[in-house]
Structures are given as C-alpha cells and as structure tokens.
Length: 305
Ligand code: CP
Ligand code: NVA
Image (cartoon, rainbow, N blue to C red):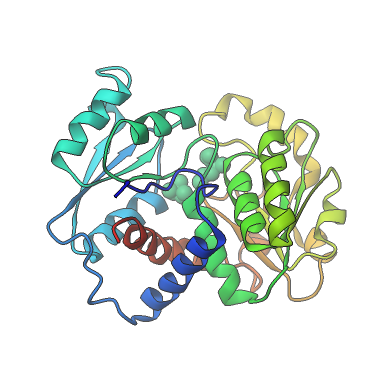
C-alpha cells in the first residue's frame, strides 16, 4: 500500500477531511480513545527549522497518547540540507522510525523529505502551508458555528495559514474571502486551484482590499501575524502595509452578531489583533490551539490505517 502524507490538504478529499474532523470530535470527548493506539511500538521524529509552542507540544502529546514515542530534533542538531542532504536525512530516518513531522522554511524541503522516504510525513508548517492549523480551525468551526456554506473572512497576510484555510474552505464548500493590502494576497495559482475545487464543492473564493467588505457577512473572522517567522527584517514595512487591517472591536462591529474570531497564534497583540478582541467571548483561538491535539491525533490515525 502506498504511504500517505499530509503536505498541503490539496491531496485530501472532502471525505478525508470530514472523517478526520469526525474522529477528532470523538477523541476530544473521549469516545474510542483506548483502542486507537496506532503508534504502539512506533517512534515519530519531530524536525523543526523554526520555533514552535503549539505544534511541537501537541504533536509530542499526540504521539504519546497514541502509544508511540516522540524524538525531538532541533534543526541545528540535524543540519538538514547542510550536514547532509534532505534526501539522506529521509533515507536514514525511514530505516529507524515510523513517522516524520517537519516544520521547514521552504515547502520544497518538506516535499523532498516526503518523496525520499517510505514513511508518512506531516507538514508542521512551511512557508507555503499549515494544513494542521486549517484542520484545527475546521474542528473549531464545527463546534462554534456548525453549518454548511459559512462565510469565512481572512484579514491579513495571505501566506501559509491563510492559504491552508482557503483550501479547507474550498474543500468543505465554504465561502472564503481574503482581505489584505495589494501584494499580500494568497498565491494566484493556489487561488485558481481553490476556485476549481469550489466549482464542485459549492464554495467560493474572493479577494478584496477592503476589510469591512470581507467581514460584513462573516460567520468567522481569522487573522495571523503580519511578519511571519523568517520575515522579521520586514516587520516595520509590514506594520505600515497592514496598518488598515487590524482585527479590532471597530472591525468586528461591522461583522454580523455572533461572528467568531480566530487566530493561529502566536498573536502579536496590538498589531494584527487587539487584546480586546483576542480576549473577547467571540474568540475561539485558544480552543483552536487545543484542537490541534485532537485533530493531529486523527490525522495520525488516518495515516496509519
Ligand atoms: N499555531 C502554531 O503553529 O503555533 P506554533 O508556531 O507555536 O507551533
Ligand atoms: N504565518 C505564521 C504562522 C505561525 C503559526 C508564520 O509562518 O510565522
């Protein structure tokens, strides 16, 4: 049987995603947990080229709760692509362990890892995609605003987290709107692929420079930092470029009553989101952070069954 990975979410069908979200809900409320020790006697390796709190802790916990053992490898100790090639790292790890969870800068590093080994590889965030975050948002949305064809407004940088949420929305038939300054839209090829998926799913993708326009029908408003990991040198420029795109009480007042707000975290309070909004009842970001654990366990079960 061909091994499965989780690289972008494009490779997952709506049924795959629905099944993962169903299982994540069961894992969260304790149903069917005991029999799911799919990693009994197995080891998962975590390779991170960038800092992490949620992803590292939730994966380590997920692997442990599924009966396996997790090995943490900071990039400086592996030297992936420096001490030895990405392909050689993969070819060695597949001989010893059973799962690779990798956070890399270049998405290409992740795909090279995945195509060079026979064991599952999970994307723990690349510059292109954060599928685990999108799945956790999917679970959180189901809990907080169940329903079909919801309106999701992403206000901010159209990079990794935004792109994966756009894919999730396209697959599940939601309407996704990105609001951001010119030059920070989600990548055009990804937008086009998502539009094609929407033609079958009933979803919709639109881009605007106007945040008020994006949130006015939103069931959920999402944001992410303006300067991602690796873009620290652009922080001051980005603060100026994104100045009109802060998710604050004034913007949320333009959304329909009952709209929820989320953020992948870490948040830069006072920049892309105010503390008032992040600490408000409408905010589900911390529930989404918890759901990383449940949804990633469900992904691992999906990959090993
Ligand atoms: N949201 C997220 O991936 O958090 P970390 O960077 O802390 O893992
Ligand atoms: N866009 C952010 C997400 C962090 C979880 C980054 O890449 O740093």
